[in-house]
Amino acid sequence: MRVEQGIVEDMLMKVRTGASGPQGAVQKEFGLINLLKAGAAQLIVLHHLAFYGPMADQARPLMPALIDWLDAYGRIAVQVFLVVGGFLAAKSLSPHAHPGVQHPFRTIWRRYIRLALPFMVAMLLAICASFLASQWMTHDSISAPPTLSQLGAHLLLLHDVLGYDALSAGAWYVAIDFQLYALVTLLLWSAGHIAGQRFRHWLMPVLVAIGISISLLYFNRDAGWDVWAPYFFGSYGLGMLAWWAGDPARKPGEAALLLLMTVVPTLLALNLEFRSRIAVALVVACMLFLFGRIRLADYRSHGWALVNRMATISFSVFLVHFPVCLVVNAGFTRFVSEQPHEQAFGILLAWLTSLTAGAAFYRWVELPLGRMLMTLTQSATPRTFLISQTGMQSRAIAKLRASR
Image (tube, rainbow, N blue to C red; front, top):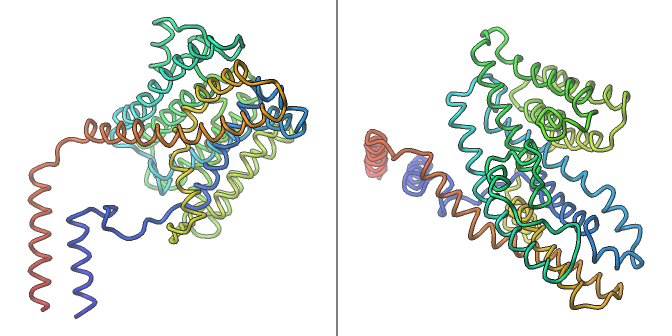
C-alpha cells in the first residue's frame, strides 16, 4: 500500500512540474560527454590565444613548448565536438538506428534557429570587438567592418561557402555543425521512405558506415572540401555509430559488428594517409562506445558540478571567446609592457574572462533564445492534451485517496 501511494504521489509531482521540473530528482548527467566538451572548449580558447597572439608571441620565451603545442595541435580539439555532435545527433534523431524523421524540414529549421540566433549575437559582439581592438593595435586577427552581404552570408551560415571572410574564429564550425545535422536528418528521412522492415535495424548504420568511408578516403583528404559537410562526416559519423553500438538492447554480436564498422574504415583511411585529427576522432568514438552512456547520479559533487557547468556553457564560450581574447590582446598590446610575465598574465586573464563571458552569454542570450525557440516552434498545448492531463491528475488523486 505504501509503495503504491509513493508511486501515485510521484505521478502527481510529474504532472505538476514535469519530469525534469525544479522539484524533480537530482538530474543525471552524461559524465564523459560533459568532461570531453568542457576540456575541448578550454583547448579551443587556448589554441586561439596561442595562434593569433600577440600576447602569446611575447610570452613564448616563458613556455615555448606549451605555446607551440597549443598553436599546432590545440585545434584538434574540434574533433571532440564533431564526434560528440554525431553521438548526440543519433541519440536525438534515431536512438535505435531506425530510419525515418517525421518532419525533416521542421527539424532542420529548429536546428538552424537554435544555432543562428546566438551565433549572430556573437558576430555582433565580434564586430564591436574588432572596432575597439583596432583603436589600440594593428593586427591580422582584426576584421574589417562587414558589408551587408557579408552579414547576410553569416546569417545564412554560408559565409565560407560564399567566400566571405569570417567575422570570428570558429564561425566555420557553427556552419559545418548545421550542415552535418541537416545532412543526417535528410539521410534518415530518405532512408525511411526506402526501408523495408527486414533491414530496418541495419540500413542506417550501413549508410553511415559508407558515408564515413567515402568521407575519410576521399573528401577529408582534399582541403578544397573543408567548407562542406562531407569533409567532416567521417568524424561525425563515428559518433553516430558509437551511440548505436553502445545500445544496451543490442546483442553482443551486433554491437561488435557495429564497432567493426566504426574501426575498420577509419584504420584503412589512416593507413592510406595518417591524419592525427582522424586518429583523435577514432579514440573519442571508442571512448564514447565504452563509457558514453554512463550517467552520473552525484550531480552535486563539487568536481563534477564544475565539469557539468563548463560543459553547459561550452557552446557560449565557443561563440564569444574570440572577441574577448581580441580585446584583451589589444589592451595588453596598447597599455602593458612587452615583458613575458606580464603578457603571460594577459593570456591567463583572457582565458578566465572568456569563461566568464561565456557564462554570461549563456545566461542572458543562449538560454532566453532557447526558451523563445521552444515557444515559437511548439504549438500551443492542445485542449485535448490538457483534458488528458487533468483527467490523469484526477484519477491519480482518486487512487491516492482510495488507498488511504
